[in-house]
Amino acid sequence: MATPLVPPMALASVYTFADVDGLDRAYGATPPDFTYCRDGHPNARFLSDALTKWHGGAWGQVFPSGMAAIGAVLLPLVKAGSRVIASDQLYGKTTHLLVGELSRFGVTTTRVDTNHLPAVKAALAAAPEPAVLLVETVSNPLCRVADVPALADLVHATGAKLVVDNTFASPVLCKPLAFGADVVMESLTKIIGGHGDTMLGFLSGSDPDLGARVTATASTWGYHAAPFDCWLTARGLDTLDLRVKAAAANSVRAADWLVGKPGVLQVVFPTRPDHPDHALARRILPAGPGHVFAVELAGGRDGVNRFLRAAGADLPFAPSLGHANSTISYPDAASHRNMPVAEKLAMGITPGLIRISIGSEPFEQLAAALGKGLNGI
Image 1 (cartoon, rainbow, N blue to C red):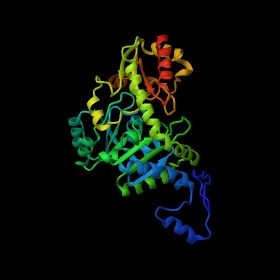
Image 2: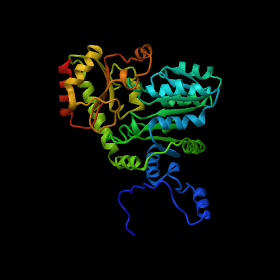
Image 3: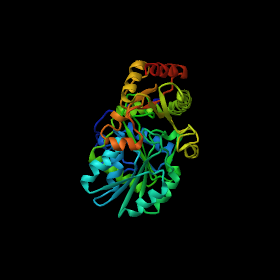
Image 4: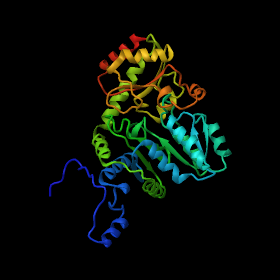
């Protein structure tokens, strides 16, 4: 029988069986056969298997968003009285989940500068029940780089788990499990999806028992990834290596091109020697820190508006990222919108800061768009 070259889309919400014995066999299989779409379907399995293999994980699962994936791994690991140690440079919605939501269930969060290892060690020691340390490989939006191997050593000495959000790096540039992380999370909405048309999240880990707990949590809480989004995202995996490397190369050129331009106060990217994690990035991310960096423009919010209006459709302004071409975001009013002003300023999120997600378009096209924006300032 002929086999389709591309995995077909399976849109069925439920599967049928000849009898009860057949259903029992489906539930008892390893891995379980498909019964109900909420518990798994062929497109989710194909995608998760491919990404799990890429990361070298013992298990993997796809979720309807990156935030759903974070929730799905935290729920089995924490309980009332647990403490989460979290980087003080996390994506704004992740911080809200930890501080604003889990606190309602008696879970406390200590936010710490995870680039200062003595502070991390002290926070872990002070926690009555440290359950999780949560960091980003490359932080959003200031591109701080996590020393994953050193953090893993500190965390495992306490019996806690290290969860690493690897969204900006992707498995092309970093495999946190190989550095000792217990779980890696990625928002597939971003460069892994890469075409601005899907929303998914992914988890992979080294402990099969935790994987089983995550799977049970996902079923109970309804963290179901839609077949069509899984199919679209899997379609892009064959070009992921090419897209990531092309965007990363463009990012280095764009960051260097912007330095010293009129209207540019600073460029924040680990490839730059003035970035605080320049040396660390070369060790943890030898192929480059990715395709996202921050730029502080003169004139604050008004300067940003002038830049965006001048660049126009050549450099679209969007609250998130994940397109094949470059886009601009404004952390102060998007990714970190609900964070107190003092906290944003402490992180380095000023009214003049923009976040650029660099794509794989020709560099000359990108430079022209950036030039148009700067001319508007």
